Length: 224
Image (cartoon, rainbow, N blue to C red; front, side):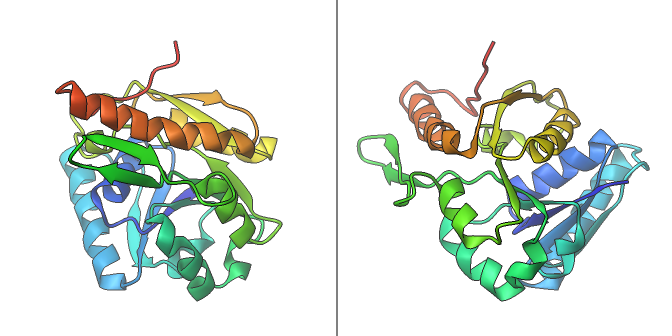
């Protein structure tokens, strides 16, 4: 069975994503963190969840970010400002020929006026900047960006969002589509090359602003 590693996977999004992927029954998961103890605690939470749901098809383990990089697919679930130092600490060679997913949406918050704006780096998007940090053989794909963060841990609710996926390698995108489709009722959609990450990342600040200003919660994106 293929394995997915979630680097920086100890927050609600990372652990919720781990739970959802494991419950899909098609991928094993490894949770990574700077400290192995913290990662193992999150993995134990996932294992408890799997037992409660009677799921024995998949496993979840924890370790340092470097420990989990042997997985087939790596998900970057870290603040954008920590990505470069994490890659350098692990070593670029660990990312060679890997399928890597960025779900990062850099944003600027304006709490008084209740709106968010994209905070893209000079490259135009977090994904395009991360691509420069990785070895040339790495296959970066942008996905999961616009699933409402609060929904990952709410396991009794189905996720029926459409998920825009962009990247420059068709095989990598196919692998990510398979992963996305294994989670609840998510529907993966090909959104073109990695350059489209500029648009995909910019949707999330809009969605959060709409939610804040209209009394909505956990707004998601549907392309139907």
